[in-house]
Image 1 (tube, one colour):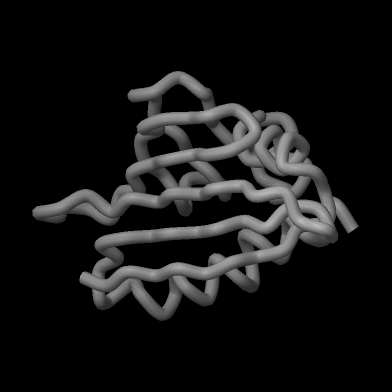
Image 2 (cartoon, rainbow, N blue to C red):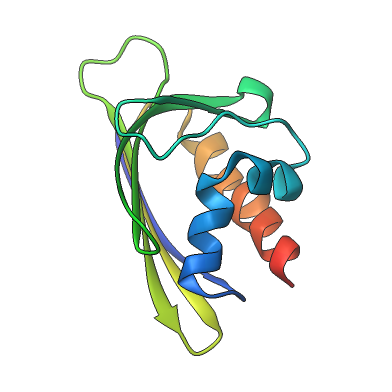
Length: 125
């Protein structure tokens, strides 16, 4: 298992980025795919037509999202924490993803930059 941490700059306010990450209609706009998402802790979510799925753990509106991502059977859950910081160019997104299976690490870390946050950046640009 590996951990990953990276910062991304998105040209929108933390509140706008938060809504784009938690509202299923907004998610569909920037991913191009249907999404299941709720801000209810304990609810299940699904993005990119089921390519990403898991359970929502906690939310602080406009500031923080914490989720468990599913990778099949794991001893310890894979946790994604997204913290939104105001930045001169919009929002600095602090991403922490823990317990990524070794076999998935390269695809997941590449996907965070090239698919997930690039699509979000393009949406707001």
